[in-house]
Image (cartoon, rainbow, N blue to C red; front, side, top):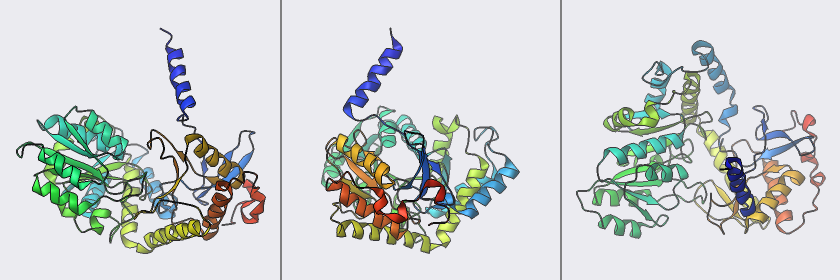
Length: 420
């Protein structure tokens, strides 16, 4: 058996299909985000503006969070040193879980090392421990939800994206006394659509189903205090389990669930992905707690974020750049064909200093290739204007555009200090 050749053949297949993933080594600067430097293929230092970071509010570069992280690390060290039941539960972990529970109007919360791990562990634990549990999952759910459901081999029923009529038809097929769990996202990251939360809650009540919502792309942004779509819709008490992340708008690292105290204890006691994983570093918990309090306190930061999103879409519209209308902050620019999508992203980076990752299969279905534009609270009007103009030129087939046409963006990497 030629194992290395088997691996190589599989990788070559990805390359032939256009789905092989290439990684740009980003030299992120806390002082100059969203601008960063990188080395091109010739080894020369270049700079670009990041348009695909989920650091929505720019809080990973916030000085008060950095200071809190350093202070807590100096006191508690760089790691927790164990799982939660083996010395890995610190006062910082418990304080953050209390903050998260209060934020989502739940009795308890449980930290994980990522929202992916939280989804997989929670869904698999529920499936394995609740005999006969049937999952009802939106067809556009994230890979972590799919993996969690698949891993416990329970019966699953997939409904068309946000299709409440089909969801009800599927619910009718399951006996009233059989356990059910409706799993969906509040904001879908690859389409920008928002779930009909109230309709799902109504169906869950009618058919006696539990509800599980992934709020990772909504936490920190929506609602009066930034707790997410559920807070915005005033239905926090009506959803059983909330999954969230500390790694996007909160700007730190990790994931969590929030639910009733009994359900939290249930996952804490049976969830192998929680029990056997070293806990988050205490300093990370301290920084995340500080970030959430800042989000709750400073509404202006979220207003600036949504103002930037609106200005971005207005600029795209004025420059004739097509994008999908949706009610969320995620801006999708369709680009037919994986090869064309990758080529457009390459031209944007090399000629215009714009970093956008091409979104191809399997992240989205074949035929739905796109550029997903993420505007943060720290993007400036000149960044937005430059992006819109560059997309206009390249989408109209002018691949010879020279980035020197935009003097304010033609600085050498070493000359960027203080220019924003």
